[in-house]
Length: 63
Image 1 (cartoon, one colour):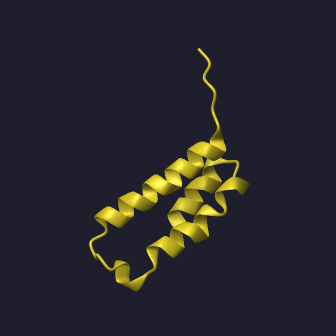
Image 2: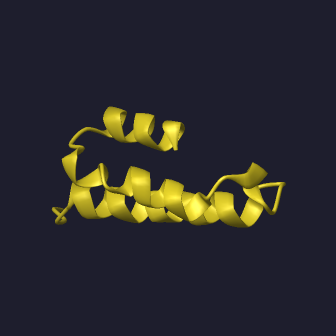
């Protein structure tokens, strides 16, 4: 069986998903004063330039 796979779209979805999980579950509602929306936008702009899972994992880890 073959299925189409778009790495860029999946990575974009996963960044958004991870961002929302942290936003909703982080123990400090004020995120220690970090502008979490700004952080998402900062890291999301790199997603179109990533082509390997290892690089993607590093991006998520840094975010």
